[in-house]
Image (cartoon, rainbow, N blue to C red; front, side, top):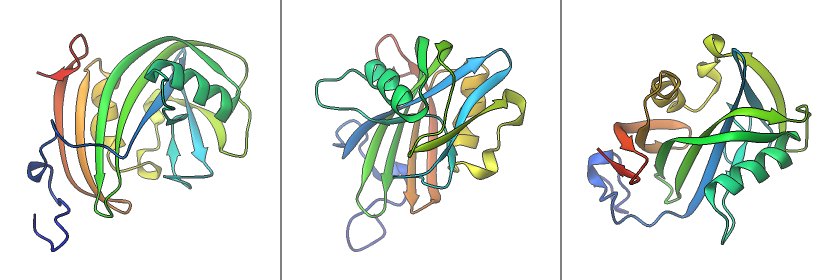
Length: 177
């Protein structure tokens, strides 16, 4: 650790197998033909950025159930055909950390509408605005869109990504390969 508080600045400085994350959360990317549902996030972590619907997992809730609930709450759509495609681990230099589970949904019911949390929009998959998203999205999302399942590990200082590592993920066992 190259600072006085012992906060890691590179992914190699973390024992990821024993790290206790502050929170667990989900992202849910819904597809409709060649389009993907994205949001302009209005509140919370990442406000002002483009992302997918999602949020924090409640005690006793599964990640998949959270993906459905958060998508309904944020954009009024119920995702279906969920499959987990990634696990993303984040440590921020302010001490906050987050483990995220990423789902793709092949179907949905309802029409997206704006809420206090998000303004949804359909985007062609080949036009995803990575420059308006978290820096890590440009690293892992293209790989997952091409069929890989990944485990991402990231260190952030505010909005700036300091370090990253992407590993293949075996979702049958939930461990890196």
